[in-house]
Structure formats: C-alpha cells, structure tokens
Length: 230
Image (cartoon, rainbow, N blue to C red; front, side):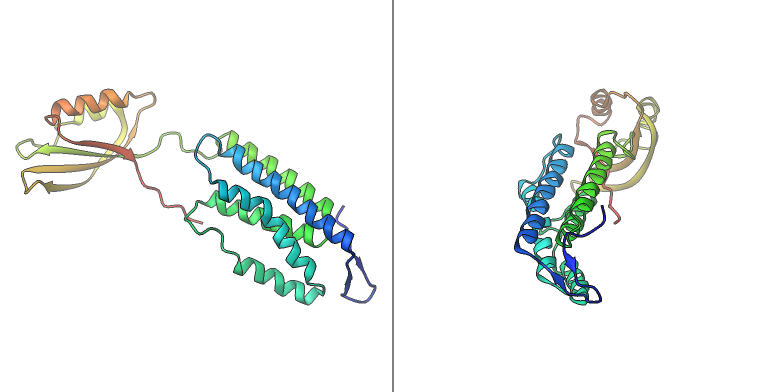
C-alpha cells in the first residue's frame, strides 16, 4: 500500500516518470481534492462558507503533485517540499484554524499523490476525512455555555451597584463587572459585564427586565470575543 507507482533505479535517486503515471497522479490528486472540498462544504453547511476556498481545495492537491512530479531527484524534492509549504499562502483573507487545517490536509494529500503513493493518499484522505467529519458533527470540544458580553447604559442618578443583582441571580450562572465608563457628556454610565447564562435561560425576558430598570436606554448583548491560538 505504501509503494510508489514510479520506478526508482537501483542505487540511484533518479525517478523514471512516465506520462501516464504522471497523469494518474494528477487525476487522483484532483479527485481527492474534490473529496476534501466536499468535506469542507458539508461540515460548514449550517453557516456561510467560502466558494472560492472550496474551489481552491479541489485544485490545490493537483498543483502540489505537479510540483513534486516535475522535481526528479530526492535532494531537489526535499527542497521543493520546503518551498511549496513556504511559498503557498494559506488565505488572502483571515480564517480560522479549521481553514488552515484544510489547506494543510490538501497539500499533504497532493504531496503523497505527486510522489506516486496513490493508495496511501486515498486511504489517508478517507481516514482523516471521516475523523474530521465525526468531530464536527458531534460538536467535539464545543463550549456549551458560551461567555457573552453585556453592555447596559444607565442614567447617572441610578446606582449600578446592586441595581441588577436579582436579575443576574435569576438568569446567569456567572457574571462580573468588567468596566464602567461615562457617556453622553457624563450624563450616563455604560456598564460592561461578562456573563454566562443559565441553561435554557430566556435572554429576551432578561433584556426586557433590564430595560425596565435602566429607563429603556441602550442594551447590547453579544458573544464575547475569543482569540484563536494556533
């Protein structure tokens, strides 16, 4: 299964590449790239995904395999591998770690196909693709209670200390005051809280109760920003 389809001369690093073998490698790389692209689409179908990125995943393994096929010797191949991984930009737009993993996945499969390890590339695509699909469909490592940011604007005559404590106890499991600042020429306060809601808490009811306390001034509830570490 791990044998290459290219013939290597005994005692030599030179590969004998036939046009038919090269076309097989490129064709397999395209097929496997299409499978990788489908995995990306199906695991992101519930949210917006990039069409351009999906197309890139189809052709990227073929492009990598062409580079590897064109380089014949083992030494040159080592330098070409380093060059491919260095020169190829992951994305022109910011993406998350899952997008980068798809690019690395596609490049690794293209590398295997370009070196002639057709069966290995196909088996690796199936194994990694199935594992990735299962992890995404089972919401592996997904934080159930997401921390959120709450910004409340209150008039200057309202003492914010203890003004909302009963509501916080009713609707949240955890909450703390992050910062306080004045707005509107000092006539109002803006309170910023970090909180985690209780399970099945009614967020609309929570906001409606806050509006009754702050005189129907501005209230903002959003997901807390999380910085991804690669």
